[in-house]
Amino acid sequence: MSSRCPDLRKFRTSNGPPHCLLIGEIFTRICQYAYEAANEDSNPDFCTLNALAQTCSAFCDPALDVLYHAQLSPVILLRFLPVDVVDDNGRTLNFRRPVCASDWARFDFYARRVKVMYFYSYGEKFAEKAQLLRRELSPSVYDSLACRRTSDPLCPNLQNIYWDVSDLVWSASLPLPTLFLHPGLRAIHMYHRLRPFGNPMLQLACSFISYVPQFACDIEEMHVNFDGPRGWSDFLHASLPSLRSLRILDIKGTSQSGAQKIIMEASRLPFLRSLSIATYDYTGVSAENVPPLQATVFTTLEVLELKYAMAPSLTSMFRSYQFPKLKSFSLTLVEDTIPASKDILHLIASYLPNHILQHLSVKVISPINAAMDVFPIRVFSPIDIQPIFSFRNLISLNIGCIEVKLSDSDIMRLAMAFPRLQQIRMRSDICLTSIIHFVRHCPDLEDLNIFPLATSYIPITADRLPGDGLFNEKIKTLNVLDTHLRDLPGVAAFLSDIFPNLTSVEPQLLQEMVEIFKAVRMQERRAEQGRRHL
Image (cartoon, rainbow, N blue to C red; front, top):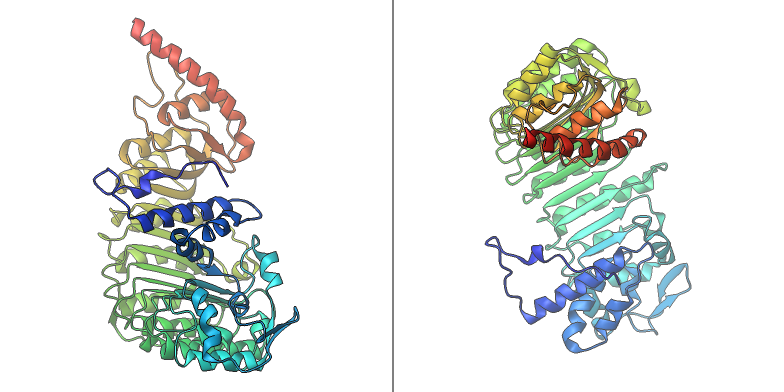
């Protein structure tokens, strides 16, 4: 176990001093710390938790709760049934006899501790362990689990289900994750890896989605990530009206028409806070074939992400829906024509609440490049991005795959437009000294990524500082990707003066500046001594 000490700040109240913990809470904190420390290793070993679980009754329940919080497979729980019931030959798990009520006692003892269940090999760290647990379940196992589920949930405290639909181990007439649905479930994550998505897999996915409103109608999060299959979004569209408690809806892999149907049903969900939709077909959408939508207000939506959206569909959506409480908007627009790409910023500024929006991300790509996952740079003028200047309360601004031609005065107007800015990422060939406008007008800025930078700076002297006395202590990393800087000592002197806490410069090709920074800061101290002497 690691020798580091736990961070006491997370035990403190808002007033500062740490609050008193009950004995049970202390034991739970110790077990959680042991789990986190073991999980930092590439090959986690939970021997410390196993020992705590066997130490005494006080540690037993907290240690077991942490150990069985997340399970890579339901096979682990099935092994807790009596040995004369389970027949495991390493490839198939079967039941030798019918399971009676008393046989479930040890299963229930551990199943009630499970909060997260994975139905696939999740992550590289646990891939080998999960592979050892892969079993084909016989029909007798499905029948016994289904019979048990009619009286009590298999895992009554289960909150999250992760299911890889393409995992053939769970392919059966009834998807195994369906048996673990229950009213207390909070989140469902479905996806399939990059492999052919056949009809049996599609039927399994659609069957599972149709069961969700029946057995887990109170879920708060739904994440579905499918690449390419058609038809499944109709089942999701039909299920949404019954999922009235949804707060987060994340859909990837639907068609343009399927996305429109999902957005229409999502607008009727009373508690929806976040909506993310990524489509996969980039052709055949024009202003003529986009059906008119009924005017609707998203009364609670705060986060909206649209990936691979087409301009006609986006225009129709903005004209039909209102987002009065939207705080974050992320858009990846698929558009081949430059004029239509530029018009989209005017559309965003016209229909989104400019006094509430805090996070804005816009990327423009072409249909061919979207399919090839290659994103060329579009060129915008200062006038093209001027519509977004109306979002005065922006905290983060990200303009991707677009190069904006900005002069020093344009950078000054950009910085003045967003006084609350904490993060900005965009591409623009600007002078190095133009950064000083962000230091002057954006005091909360923490992440500055505007590149490439052209070398232009004020040399440091004993009677004048490069930044004219202005500085930002929050920026620690600077990204100057694709830049061609000359006279690195002079550049380092300028950056060191306006960013006194700067510790690294990306990319790694410019890490030689770190040594230069040491020499420059030594020179700064000497200059400060010279000013004091004068």
